[in-house]
Length: 286
Image (cartoon, rainbow, N blue to C red):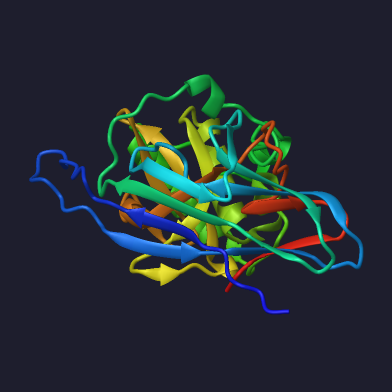
């Protein structure tokens, strides 16, 4: 049986160029991005109900705004406690070996420089899963909290992580800040969560995000999913990606689809999508 590719199409429309601080208007980045999912009943029995949950681009960040979107088939949408934008597809009585296709189209406006945005400090300063800065190991192994402005402090923590944590290659488990601190290694998740945890410990609101880093028109591959961090300073969320070596620059290339942390999300710990139904499998297409 041949399977077709379902497409998630994100068109980043630059209808709103942002104005840099003390500088001229910056040209927005225009990108066409495609990805897809194939949902299949791999068994010989009818599946009464199958579900697919997909992380869509966040509706608004300091550099990203969801302008419009549509799906085929129709989907329900839900926003979880962290602000993640989720699309829910339901398929009834899926025949044996049948393939279901999902198409999503979204238009986003991307801003090269972060725009002012309100943040709830209490939410983004908490310790908890992935951000375990209240553990005694942070006092014993963590860096001395630097003095200075939030940007200066964040930069010092970023530099410390760059020299302390070893990139151990991709790991499908989100191990978090405590693991990165005690083991001195991790993948993008650990770099991002450790940075956010250290910022929170220093009194700077911060969070780890997930999505895709793109520089041109492309078809997204499953392996291209990436996690990075943001910290809040001067009324704006600022980019920090200690694994890739970017600090407060390049945010227009980062398409955010996930905020990491405790949530009521039906995706649970799944980063990009989740499928449900006995005998059902779903893949993100290459």
